[in-house]
Image (cartoon, rainbow, N blue to C red):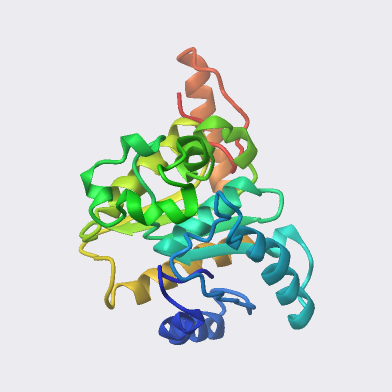
Amino acid sequence: MAPWGNGSEKDILFFKSVFDREIASGRVPPLVIATPSGRRSLYMDFLDSSERWESYILSDVLPFVRRSAHVEVLRERTFIGGVSMGGLGSLRIAFKHPELFAGVIALEPAIEAALEWTGAGTETRFWRPERALRPMFGNPVDRGYWAANNPATIASVAPGRLLDLRIYIEVGDQDALYLYEGAEYLHRILFDAGLAHEYRLVHGADHVGPSLLPRMADALGFLGRQLSPPGWIDQNVLTFRSAMDEGKRAAGIEVEQADPRRLNHR
């Protein structure tokens, strides 16, 4: 789990009661959670290679956790997630390396509603001005490197790479940083690409405050459903789908095989 920008490994303590309660209830299986501190690095490798945070997560943190905690070295049991800047970093790393993670969970990710840096509006630039990006992307900002590390751009260029990645995105509709703009933008890219995912616009929630505790519980609920599928597709559902498929065929609509990884929208 990656914390807020300029946060630390101690940020996990804010959510400890939620983790303990959800695990004790059985809604989520026992977890090993690592929270590396990333300062304001955006959890990325800098253009000039002076700092390599993405490489640190993949080459140091992940192997260390697996080795020291004696957990399974399986993609199917490995998830990455974070809050705010940590949500941004988690989306980027998972989208760039979907072969390493079963899923990604991003709470109020600090992402821009744009495919290019020049498209980021004042709603972004007031809290992330260009000068704040120069350590990571160069001076002036290297537009190609920015796009190559922007979750929305990565998803739009090759959405098929993300087909087997379970994706959870949420954000408060009162977020003072307007982060609902970027989250909604990414949601639409995933939706239009037909990639199944879970997206929540949390009514009345801001970027900080007590709303984050129940929101984390909801995110853990998603995680639990991925690790232990609840069996929602029972015989009643199959019977209903069969009847709907007959109606679709009668209307001249092509019926596609159900696939939980895809949205079969037209």
